[in-house]
Length: 178
Image (cartoon, rainbow, N blue to C red; front, side, top):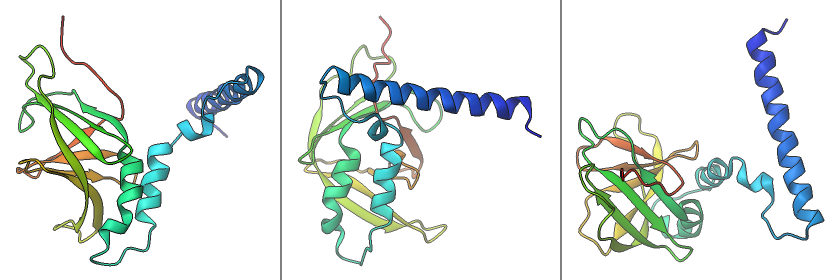
């Protein structure tokens, strides 16, 4: 027998699927060129799965560059709690050619400030504690000492010199108070 919580979750899922169906129909009715709503759902995780399911052989990371750029394209931000080891907010933007800009701001600042430009360079290695392979990218053409790690679940994290992973969100956000 289902609990009340399970029934509520099931109803919510059915509701979301109904909305996605209606949105897809609106695009057809109005002749709109909106992307398919199914491409909005889980797109980061499906692109990450595509990267991790590729038959990778050592020394051939450049062959995966297209998939990594496709995953990373857009704007990613960290605007969360800046206590502890994470003392700044981050924003990166990657275009379809792999050009990227990134910005770092401290919470006391009033805007993102100047951006640094770089080119996305695919990267892979194995985690030292588990031996599992990770894929991601580094910003070449800059003097940065950090990497961006693509999680198998579709997440993107920035890892700096301290080895701490800071999760980014796939949208543009402004944490600055007015």
